[in-house]
Structures are given as C-alpha cells and as structure tokens.
Amino acid sequence: MPAPAPAAHAFDLADLIDLECRIAEDAAVDDEALRARDHAIAQTLDAGAEDRPRLLSGWLAALRPHHPMPGERIARAVRLGRLALGIAGVLMGWGAGAWLMAYDGRTPVNVIHALAVLVGLQLGLLLLLGLGGLVRRLGGLEHAPGDLVAVGRAAMLLVDRLLMRGDAAWRAHDPDRRARWRAGWHRLRARRSLYRDVERWHAFGALQGFGVAFNLAALGAILTAVSLSDLAFAWATTLQIDAADFAGVVRALATPWVWLWPEAAPDVALVESTRYLRLESAYVGAADGRAPDPARVGDWWRFVVMATAVYGLLPRLGLWVWAKRRAGRALGRLPLDTPDVDRIVRRLTSHRVATRAPEPEQVVPPPARALEPQYDPAPPKTPWLLVAWRDFPIDRARLRALVEGRYAGELVDIVEVADFRAEKAALSRLGGDGSRVLVLAETFEAPDKAVRRFLRGVREAVGERRPVVVGLVAEAEGGWLPVDRATLTLWQQHLAANEDPYLGVESVESAP
Image 1: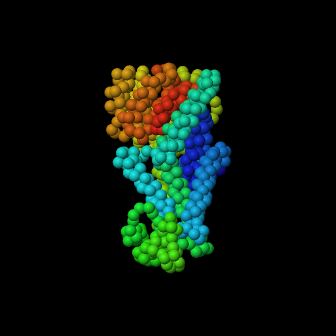
Image 2 (image 1 turned 30 degrees about the horizontal axis):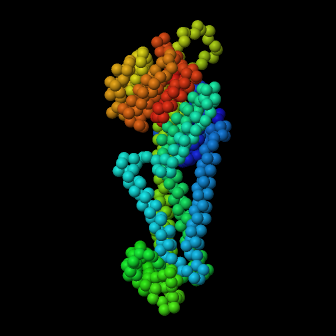
Image 3 (image 1 turned 135 degrees about the horizontal axis):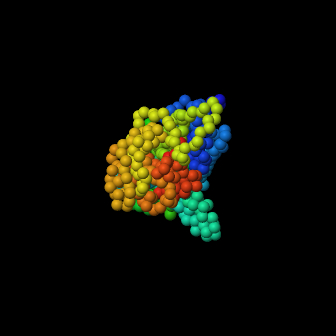
C-alpha cells in the first residue's frame, strides 16, 4: 500500500514551477507508466477534480521524494532576489538621504533639492506608472505584460536569435536536437502566457519592495543627520518666486498631515527667513548674511521627514501590499484547465476497469485493434465538438463512446473537414456554445502547414481559453491503433510552433 502523501497546501509559486517541469518531463514517459504511477498516488489523495489546486498540490508533494524538482529552489532564488533588491534600496536610500542632508557649516541644505529627489522624482514615477496602466486599460491591453516583463521577453527573444544563428554546424548536423530545442522554446513561450499575471505582479511587488526600502533608509538617514548634527535649511531657486507663493505651495503639500502635526507645516515667516542666495552665500534680508534666528532655520526637517513619508514611503508601501495581494490572487486563480493539466487530473480521478482470469487463457488474439480504456463518467458532462480531419472515418457510436469514456463528456456535434474548401464552413460551426474541441487525425502522413493553419483558425473561432485537443491514431479504418512515441513527438513539436497553451496533442488510444 503506498505511503500517504504529504498534506497538500495552497498552490504556490514552487508548485507552479514544479507542475510545468513535471508536465515537460512526463511528455517523454510511457503512458502506461504514468497511469500506474498516478493510480498509486491517487489512492493517497483526498481531493477531487473540482478542487484542482489542492489535487495537484498533493500530487506534486507525493512525487517530490522520488522525482526531485526545482520549484522550491527557484522560489527561494526569487525570494533572495527580492531580498537583494531590498538591500540595494536600503543602500541607495541611505546614500541619497545622507547626500541631501550633507551640511559642512557653510552652505545650508536646500529644501527644494530634497523635495525634488525624495518627493518629485517618486511622484513622477508613480504618475508614469498610473498613465501606463490607464493607457493599457483604455487600449484594451490590460492583460499585456508590464514594461519590465516586456523587456525580459525581448531579451529572451534576442538570446533565441543568437543561439539559433550562432552555431551553423549544430543546426546542420543535429536536426533532431534543434527540433526539440525549438519545440521546448515555443512551449515555454506558450505556457508563460498563462501566468502573465503571476509574473507581472511578482515583478511589480519586487520593485515596490525596493521603493519601500529606499524610503525607509532615506528617512533613517535624515533622522540620523537631524539627531547627530545641527542642520541648517534654506530654499533657493533662479525662478522669480515670491516667498508668500512658495509658502502657499509648501502649505498645500503639508495638507495631509497638518492636522496631525502642525509644526511640520512651515509658515510664511519660516519661508521668508530661510530664502538663500548662493552668490552672496547669505540669507535674504540678513544684515550680516547669517539667519536672524539660527535655531529657526532647522525647523524644516519636520516638513522634509513628513513629505518623504507621505509622498514617498506610504504610496510605495500601499502598492507593495496591493502587489502581494494581487500576486496571491493570481496564484489562486491559475487557469489549471489546459489539456496538459486535464490529462493529469483524469489520471488521478478516473478509475480503470481491468479483468484478469485466475489462469492464463489460450485464445487466438484478434486482429490488431486497441480498446479504449473505460472510465467512470463524472458529472456534469463537458460538451465536446469533434472534428474529423481530412479522411478520418466517422463512426458515431465509437466517437460517442470515446468522448463519454475518455473525457467524461458529451458529444455535441461532429464536423468533417475533408479539404481546404470545407475548413471555413467547419470553423463557423465551432464557436459560440462553449464546447471543447477534439480534432481527430490519422498519422499516416506527417503534420503540415495546413493543420497548423486550421488549428489557428480554430483558436480564433473558439476563443483563447477553450481547450482544443488533437487526438491522433495510427490507423482508423481497420481499428484505432495507438500512435508510437516518435510520431506523437513529431506532431507535438510541429504544433508547438502555434504557441497555444490550450492546444493539446495526444494519442486517443492511450489512457489519460
């Protein structure tokens, strides 16, 4: 009896990475071995198909002791990356704060410089961020990747081009390896499109964590300078700004906290007494160039601290919390409904029916004709549309049994695509009712551009998230024969170029 699987937990980033690695590695494993392995694991799980995150989490937990997977290591590396980014934020924030508060006893700290760096620059970045989000939403691009993710994808594309063009001998002498590499690359790009929200919010959260660390360190540097030395502040600008007007701007900026800390909102008298002329190295209006009240010129620190906290730290802290929640929500709403995941769920939740006589029977084997494995249908049944590609023979009873047994679904309609002229009419019948699509094809000839073109048309007709499965048989006329591994791999590699994460390729004679 198999050992109980470890308790399943919430589906997290490590689970997501391990799921993708497991799907990729299982593609080269014999179907019978996969069924036997997952049948044993299924006995230890207490989750059903209706709770896929918990089911898959338990499945991965049972596999990890026997199949080492990189998910936890990569998740740990991501956490270390965020930590390194936070440390960089601390160093840069402390350096900026110390530089802005530097005072050697001669030239006072310019308040406008501090506000420009600690407030103006950060508000400008937030404004650009908000405008970018607004443009994406108004332009119908709300699901498009953020700037950082787009740059990363452009870099990956550049690496792809360099690798594919940099070794002509490899391309010429090892075409199989090249085909596997390209298929893996297409599959990676297709699968990443499923997790763009997870990727985007993790990257966005890491950047906001950097901003939080930067502002905390800057505040620490400012408070340290104020506590350990007697700072003198001033304001100076080439623009012809009246002290009363500047005081109005400052009071407006202090509006969010003036009710809580009135002393942190400079009055007109402080503004007038701290205007500074660098050419004369003197405060305006001072008889000897020195401030009329030396103790008064240090009162700006309260305003600088509150401005940094309110306009720098708090927005970044709020965005960081928001990003963490959105990242968690993105993980909780993962689209675990692709054909690859469907096959795993069917192996874990379907029951194979097998009979064995006490003694071996001496019978003459029938002609080569594989039988579809039988599964207990699990209501509610999913509607399926079947597409008979080219000369695939139509046996309605057999097709209905395939859909009801293998996919626990219900056959809605059968569409024939005998030639190019029939494709357009077939595509018009596929959209609208939410049915999944099963394209049945024989493998007596290699896949060509026509089948890829047709599958792209199917995707446009049914929408981007409706599963489409290409079911392959080696021969259909005299009985559905299973497809050998090399032929199945050839079709999978060829159709991977469509970069469609909801497109599955499998032998319909094999179990899930």
